Length: 221
Figure 1 (cartoon, rainbow, N blue to C red):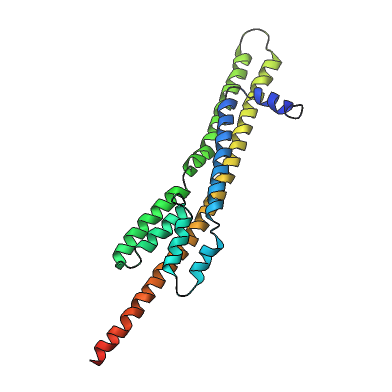
Figure 2 (tube, rainbow, N blue to C red; figure 1 turned 90 degrees about the vertical axis):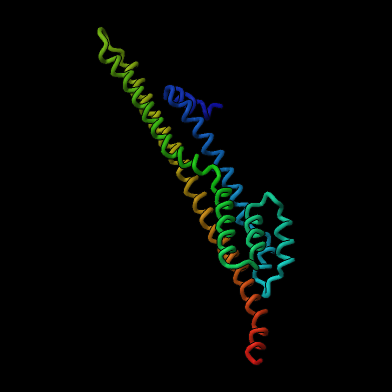
């Protein structure tokens, strides 16, 4: 307790703006942990599933079975299953359904990031509000009649500086978490694009191979 005592005393001196800033700090840390857990779990597909994409030709039934085994609440598996379901459809239909699947996956991966981005902007503003209230208290003491209390003036200035500092710290933590989650999200989306392209390319190759003998026979007749 003695270790945190100076920190607690410093925060108490920060005035009323410290309470919302602490709430923002807790929200930022919770969002960072949640997004880190989700993106970290989704970025690591099982080795047997990854091996399916490297095999030639692709074993469609085995790949679908392995993806379904990941569970209906796995966004990456849901996305790849949606691509598998339309692999034999016309190009315009595949493109439309794939875009819908990409939008669903991106919405799942970026859930909560908007709030983390908001905290990056809101925390310094709340700290600035604490700065203004602290300075107003100091100016009120300076402008009042009679003897000025130096301790009261310094307390107002301290409140202003502490609120500003805490707001900046919360914003920096939230910014770090947002940038890290955005980077992981972008890398995961790039990987999903590669795997979806492999599915559609393999399906196209099989379709062209199955039409080849028939076209050749037609030409000889």
